Length: 106
Image (cartoon, rainbow, N blue to C red; front, side):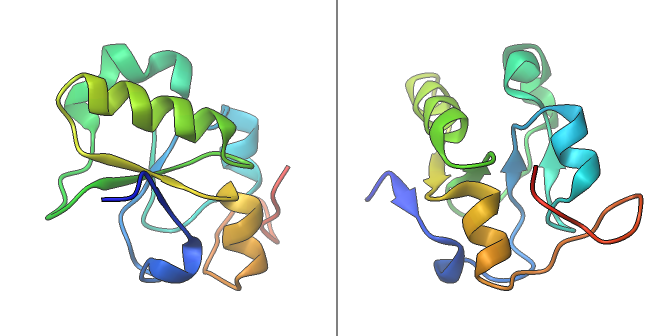
């Protein structure tokens, strides 16, 4: 199995793990995402989404999510990095929402 996937390969309603900072999340995120900032991941493993396959992990551009997916894999979880992150998700026209108006990727 590849360690990466693209937004185009994921369903619009895919449950993904978003490891970005709070301000990034607030600006715009996938409606079905679970938000656990990468710095809190180790302490919040019980909040990971349950899926039938690997958990897609996303950040802004793919760097933090690649590290998080690798760490999760080393600790017994199935995880896959979303290449290009939320920038690619947004560019692919995938659904996004924000608490304050038009969603954006910051």
